[in-house]
Image 1 (cartoon, rainbow, N blue to C red):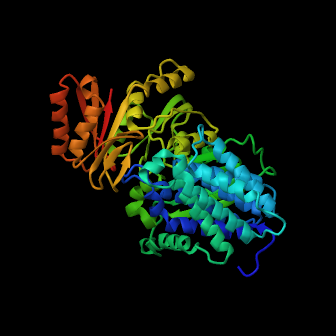
Image 2: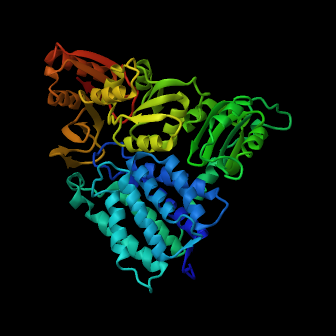
Image 3: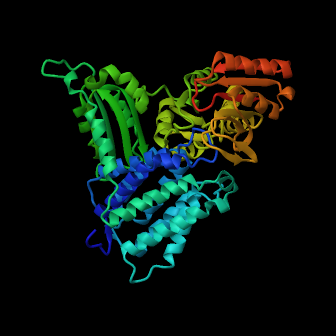
Length: 557
C-alpha cells in the first residue's frame, strides 16, 4: 500500500480480513496436518476457514462502511458459522474485537490494541478450563508483547509486523507448554491458523493481498448453475428458495421483545421448509415459496435486510434433495411445542438411525472431519421446538460449538451434556428417561450416564510419531481412547483385539462394536470371534455404523 492511513477504517479492515481468510484458505491442509493424533481426522484448518469465511460473507453484505459496522457483521457471521474448538475460539476473538470497536468509524492503533485485548479476554472466557500452548496463548502473548512496544512513532505497518512476529514466537513455543505437542513433534494447529490469518492482514497492509482465492471459490460456485433448466417455455413448479438476514429496527418494532414466531406464523401461510430464529437483534430465516416478494414485504415491516438470497429451485431440482441435505437446508416445519427434546450428533447413517431409535429427536450429521457449526445446532434447536433441549455433542471438538449455540439461542432452555465421544452419547441415549418431568434431574442423570462407559477407536496412522509412549508407524493402525494412545499394529483387526485387551474386555459385561464404512464382514468376524474366545460372557451387539475415519468404535461397559 503506497500510503498507510493513520487510522484504520471499515474499507481497510474488510480488505485485511479478506486477505487473512485467503491466506488461511491456502494453508488449510497444512493446518489440518498438525494433528496430535496421526489419524485422518485433522480438521482444524477447515473449521477455522469455514468460520472466518462465514464472517467474510456476512461482512461483504454489510453496506455501511464504518469500522464498527464491518467488524460487527464479521463477528455475527463467524459466531453463526463457528465449528470446532479452534473455530469457536476464533469467533470469540473477533466477537471481542467487534465489541472493542463498537461505535467507531475509524480506529487508532491504541484503540485497535484495546479491542484486540478484549478479543483475547472473550476467547479465554469461552473455555471453561483454558489450556496454554494453544491458539489462546498465541493470541494473548502477541497482544501483551506488542502493546509494550507501541509508541507515538509506531505506524500500522510497524504494528502488524510486530504483532505477527510475536505470534510466530509464541507459536514456536507452544510445544514447550503442551506435552502432547512436544511428544508428537508438532506446533499447535489453531495457533498456526491464527498466524496465517495475521499474515494475510500484514500482506494486505503492504499491498500484497491473499484475497483472490476467496473470489475464485465464490465464482466457481456460481458457475455450477445450469440455466438451461428454466427457459421461456418453462412453468414454475418448485418455487423459490428464499433466505435472508433481517436487522430488526427500533423505529419499526420493539426489538428486544420481538418474537420470531411472528415471522414463522406468516411464512406458514405462504411456504414450507421453514426455519427462522433470532440471534441478538437479527432474524435469520429460510423458506420455500412461490411468492418471495411477500416474504420481503412482510419482513420489512420490522427491519431492514442485511442480505437476501432468492434462487429458482427448478434450476437445481434434479439435485435438490441431495444438495439441500449437504447444505443443511433440508429443514421441516417446526414440530408442535413440547416440554423436552434431545439433540445429538453422529457420523454415518447407521449410527444416526440407531440414535433416533434410542430416542434422539434430532441427529445432526457430523463428527470428525465434519464438525457442525453453531448455526447447525441452532437449526436443530428450532426444529425440535421444546421448552428444554438436552444436547449430546459426542465429540470433544464439538462441545464448545454446542455451548456457543446454546448461548445464542433464546427460544428454549438448552442444556449441553458434555459427551465427548460416540460411546458416551450411546450410553446416555440408551438409558434416556424423561418421565421425571424435572429438567434438572434429567440433566443430572444424563451427565451421570456418560461416566460409566469407555470408548475405544481404531484408525489408520497418517504419519510416524510417538504418542503416550507408543511408537506409531505410518499406514499401521492405532487404537486409543479419547486422548490416550494404547496400541499400534499392522492391521485394523490386530489393533482392535489388542485394544480390547487393554480395555480389560474379559471383565466387562457389554461390547457395542460399531463398524466403519470400509470395514469388511471378515474383519468384523475376526473381532467378534476374538471376544467370544477371551470373554465368552460378554454380550456383543454389532452395528453397521457407516462412519468414516474409524474402522471400529468399541463401546465397553
